[in-house]
Image (cartoon, helix red, strand yellow):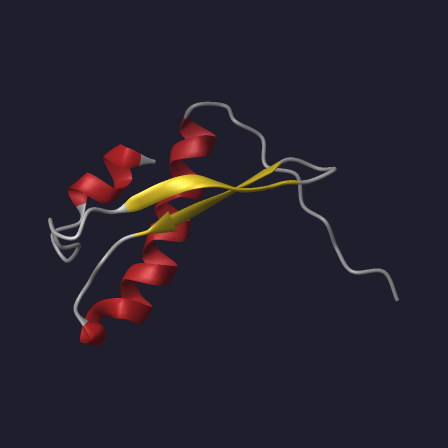
Length: 71
């Protein structure tokens, strides 16, 4: 995940980006990636980082289980 964060020039160097385990679930581990950005860049960075991390996981063969709501 760090390489994805480090490549994005919109992410500020200070304060440092926080990356950590958010939750251990029955289907996997949820990570938190909390970079600091300018307010105007927030939404774009938020969605693009998620997509970039997913693509990076795919490149490394890391499977991400999906859980769908039950109705």
